[in-house]
Length: 162
Image (cartoon, rainbow, N blue to C red):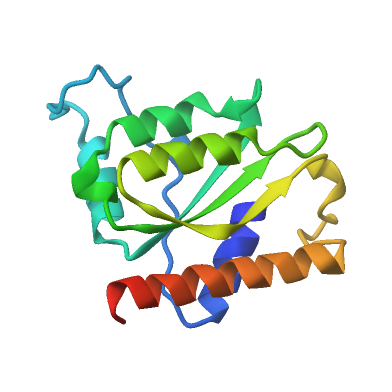
């Protein structure tokens, strides 16, 4: 739900959005090569990311880090897709809020020359954050999502000359 909230806040600022749901893609394990012609979803993902002005990366935090699926998807891309992109980061976990996944994503994206906004969303005890309709229960957290969306949109426009 956190990604959907962020997407709706960005959309409310007049920005077109698209979600790449990694659960719905057939992606191979990255083997360090660049020929994945047997997997059309790799090319689709790469092209979608390459054509985007900005990105929101949302991941569950598993065992103190980024999910394997997210890391593998990032490994299947390179500078051509990610360099110069502005990104906002979200992590969700069942335990207490922690920033390991966010920090790991920040390092990965810096390595491929992406720009990560300073605002980030780390949701611990995620089952307490939303009601049954998906509405955020805490007004301060809702305001953080607004600030996150504004920062992502503003910085994407600035860095892309839009």
